[in-house]
Amino acid sequence: MTSERTLLLVKPDGVQRRLIGIILSRIEAKGYEVVELKKLTATAELLSEHYAEHRDKPFFPDLVDYMSSGPIIAAVIEGHRVVEGVRSLCGATDPTTAAPGTIRGDLGCDWGTGNIENLVHSSDSPESAAREIGIWFGKD
Ligand code: IDP
Ligand code: MG
Image 1: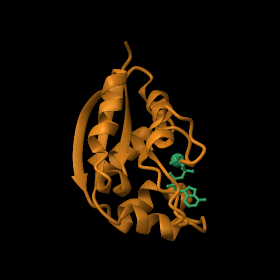
Image 2: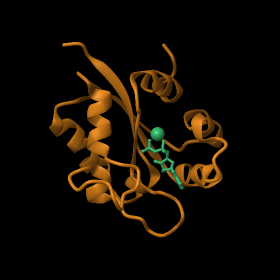
Image 3: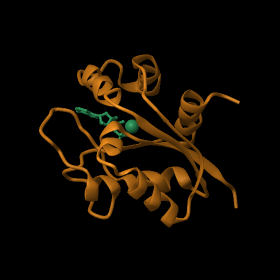
Image 4: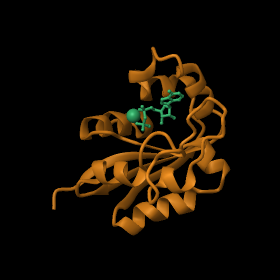
């Protein structure tokens, strides 16, 4: 098989709600391997790099506040077609309409804060995955 890697983040709401285990177990139960794992609190600088495509969006300052509000779990996940597979497990961005059966659809909720708190991030393409793994785990 040709193996591929993706970046998964358990966002601060996922850590705070004690969902790390459930989220990682869904990834593992699917058949993917967790090959790197760490817990850290993200700085505004790191988040600005990670979310470079959203820097000019009106929600960006609130997104940085949300994403730096507590510790995050960063993981590198490996497997065949893992980028699209993990995106599919995570579900759509809005937890209210994310499909049941997905992490965001089953476990996420719109709390009415204005932020889209949706528990997880996953890379949207192999190119994004390589870039994001470099940001969170260093380029080597
Ligand atoms: P994704 O996480 O499903 O790839 P993106 O559109 O790349 O979604 O947005 C990145 C993150 O920014 C989302 O997961 C969500 O937390 C937040 N976000 C996206 N759009 C909005 C918005 O319109 N208002 C507030 N937060 C948003
Ligand atoms: Mg995205």
